[in-house]
Image 1 (cartoon, rainbow, N blue to C red):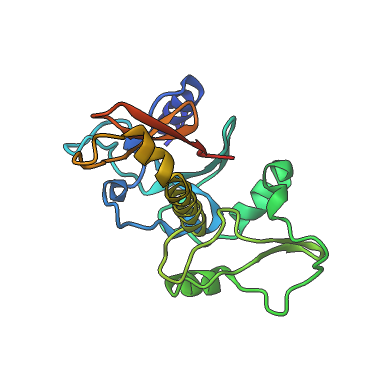
Image 2 (tube, rainbow, N blue to C red; image 1 turned 45 degrees about the vertical axis):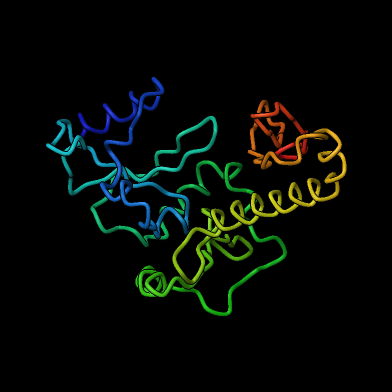
Length: 222
């Protein structure tokens, strides 16, 4: 495994694509990785050769790691199936607490019920969120944001809701500017208006390409 591990770490340092080392299920848009959604931890295969599906050969031992915009946090190499071992969260806390500080539950000293690794495995099957207790006064919410009862990442739902809300806001702007649009297209009432959303440098526009009409809607991320 050492050669495979060294290869993966070097790829990460060089900024190379490590998707071939991930689960083959990443090609399945309906797949939800419970470990990733719950604790934000990837499992990475350590094979050294590509198989026929352009993935790295599967290995029994896996690298478990977290990532942010700047760093990779290599937690441990453990057997396949170690999805619910709380030692991974403890390792992150002990080595890089600043990377997960926003998930630390402040003001909570203990849990009414502290689940075991086996309990977490069982509860995840029902997509029931659990906390991880490191010690008295050190309790973490899910490092990956957790999941909905459907299994979908809570973060994915939050982002989806945000963009849907922005689209509703843009629609409201267009309705409020109906008279401006009509004036801009005066004399062309017989032409159907087809507005398309375009994004440039974070700014959103409604564009009628045939008549070259451009309406600024606002920032995608205000």
